[in-house]
Length: 151
Image (cartoon, rainbow, N blue to C red; front, side, top):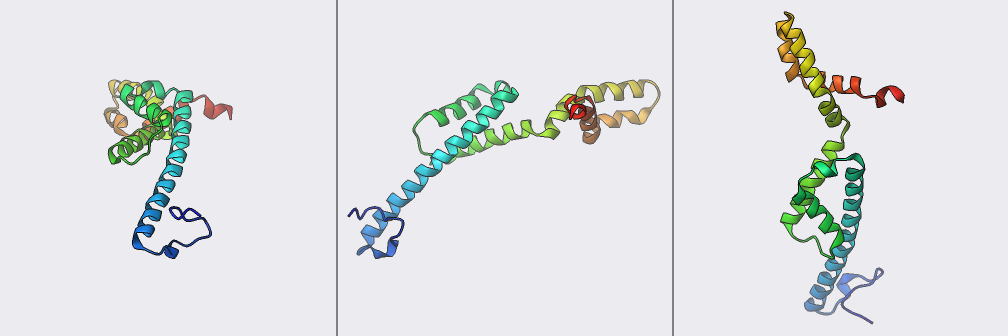
């Protein structure tokens, strides 16, 4: 029977010495890390697929694309905190760009600016503040989005 790794029914406290316990904990923690890195790789593959399908992937920096693609392809453990932080930052950026608010903000920004410029040129002085209003810009993005009318 292999004493380095406890089976699912065994308790870790059955080890006779503290060295055996430490070895079993190290092997057990490495096993957990290996399983979580596989789950993390699958999650990153799904994020990459969403980003590629929506077109956001091609707007990312080459370094960010390289970090994500290499972290899913290579056989590594995610133990480096710098690597994990950069991956979290990239995933947050992708999810932010995939969000409903961001897409409508980008879509409505130019139109909101043109509307505010037209209104201010025609005598409505308070229209300059419309460009600073986030919800006004998002409203124009929703208004211009053809998907909102076809559902």
